[in-house]
Length: 85
Image (tube, rainbow, N blue to C red):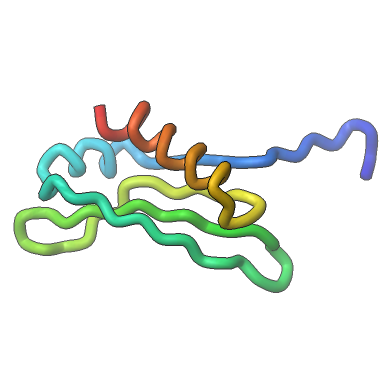
């Protein structure tokens, strides 16, 4: 690794339309994680909800090192703080 290289430990992101659509969804959020293989290591955490027509609405995504309780806490804390206002 170069001295000038910067690496992140965790990342959460969403899109403004996802946040806007979430206010129209049913009050249930489902979360899941999937392991990333090959070139990209780590775990992808995803939060989804269902709208009134039972369409799946993606709410937020997170890339973490592994599916640990710390990673889930980080994801759910940010989900609650920034997405489910």
